[in-house]
Length: 121
Image (cartoon, rainbow, N blue to C red; front, side, top):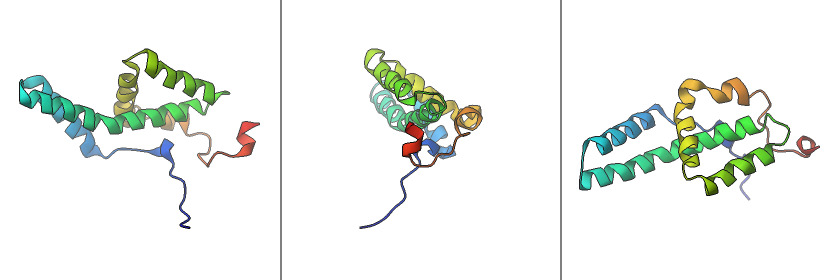
């Protein structure tokens, strides 16, 4: 059995080059048409996925600052089913995280140790 530490998903970050590839794909999508636009649109989705994960990390970090984080996270994930633009908002938050530093300001004051029984009480 390999004993590996649990990844700290709330600390996930993307490299800077990811921002440039996302912006380049979005610009290509806006400036072209036809097959190139179709490929660029799919590249926007592919390069946007890491920002969605960072946005989720921000949401989890902020949710763990309130009294009932499970309720807040359940509402957020439930909103994905009701509002088709909700994942886009999470992606925008993930994209802006490098400049806004929401996790540093609001989310990382508590330790990010693995979930323990004492946190539930």
